[in-house]
Image (cartoon, rainbow, N blue to C red; front, side, top):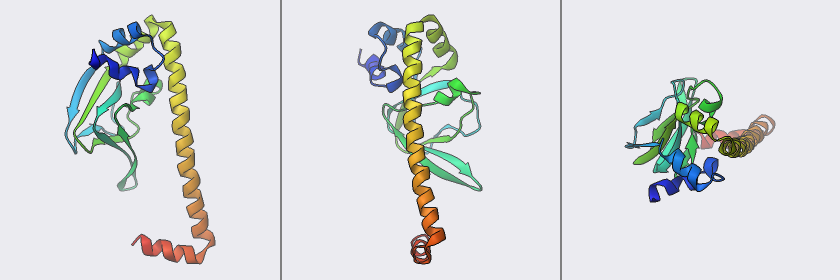
Length: 168
């Protein structure tokens, strides 16, 4: 029974009834990754919603000729949500940075569950909106702090010198 319980702590499913969790759980499968394994590649197809069961995953995006780390995901966090809404293409690369276990549900199985359980679907989509709002607020905070750094670099010669010394 413990295997099913991990879903009750996942934000997207937190409002679901126990019988809905039990039914949904049957469609999940678990995969293990070693450090350095690529879980999803930016721009490649993703047709599943994933939950980090254990470990740590680095999320990064291509920028010019390199990769920029955006965040790390840990147990209980989800990824692949945008593929539900959009075109099923990964918007970032996800790499295991520790031994990692994820549970996934295919989009077809999730869509069938949500279609067959409208009350559960309403709760799921509400939590999806709450989660995406939280992520947007976090992103706005990062953009705001980068804006402040850029403004300081543009307006303050002394700050530019210190910044340049720190980033050699």
